[in-house]
Amino acid sequence: MDKAGFAEWLHGLPAICSHSHHLPDKEHGDLSLAKLLGNSYLSWCGVPVPQGNDEARISAWLNAAGVRSYFVWLEKALMALYHINEPLSAHSWARYDQAIIQAHKDNNWHLTLLMKHCCYKAALLDAYWAPGVDNGHPELFKPVFRVNSLFYGYGQDARDHNGGNFQRTRGSQITDIREYIALVRRALGEAKASGCVAFKCALAYDRDLDFAEGDWDRAQKAFGEHPDKEDIRAFQNIVMGAVCEASAALNLPLQIHTGLGLMDRSDALQLRFLISRHPEVSFILMHGGYPWTADIAGLCHNYPNVWADLCWLPLISTAAAERLLDELIDVCNADRLIWGCDAWTGEESYAARLAFLEVLARVLWRRVDSGMMREEQARRFALMVLHDNALMLVSRAAANGLPLVRQPDNQG
View (cartoon, rainbow, N blue to C red):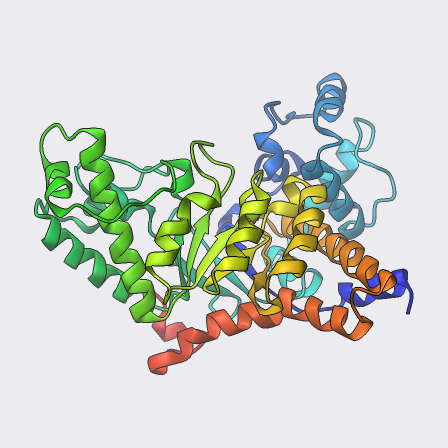
């Protein structure tokens, strides 16, 4: 087999997507090109996505964002999915728009994209707008419980970056730290009982990732009228300890967003003391810690309870994903690497898959070609990263009688 044959073989492999924000059904029915781009990472590029068919604005936007990884892979995905041989331009804009609108007249098209084109057997869903839901599709989505709001329950007016406050959501007004932590533990247990297969922490968008051991007396002060930053920090440290303890007790992995965010000590290395204090927790460090990718490789080397999740990274920077995958193969066991699309739509999920398959093909075949890896090892590695490793993680949800695929009467 040559490199082209290997790449073609990769495209047929099944996947379990480790991380997705796939939007509810109602958000896909009126999908257009502009709405698709607005619900993609291209909306993060600092240039407004053009509305309508103003050719000057479209051309200016393409000139600004048209070579970024976010754009390159989404364009490749759209060309493949909608059989359009012409690149996206002011001239072809309307053609792409109509193809997307027409396809989504089929209400199940967004799911077909995931199951048929992305080859997903399951996708872990981080529905930050309603933590723990499965979008009404338990056969595909395995819910993840986002824990951010738990860290903002010290005051009724506190909010995480998604506007969440655990106490307000629960309708409680607890002012005692130990009573609050007891409520947190109950909520995490309820999340698993309702079908959640992992916990997700995205606090890198709210604060740094350096979690010290908890100071209970200081944490209590966070419930006061005017808590200072250190009171709040102590409270959040206590909450993180409780999340880790629940993760271990419930045998659910803890996904942690690392890298991009506030860019204030959001590098994965900030987590090393938390990781060392909780060796029984499977820490899933997400996004390759970009731009501090070497941190992930170092932590994987030293801590057997650390997993590297390459979700999002190939879309951020294909070159960085390639470098990190090469390093991880050198220093990390093959059964601790996973990948997910980290996308809101089926089209961008497919773009993310294309990007990662390209990274896999380049890195693995280069190693085969240089004698660093045998072809059968490369094949096995690819299947493990795309499917088998994540399956092993989410299968832990089968413990205590909870099925991996939730039945409709168990939906929360």
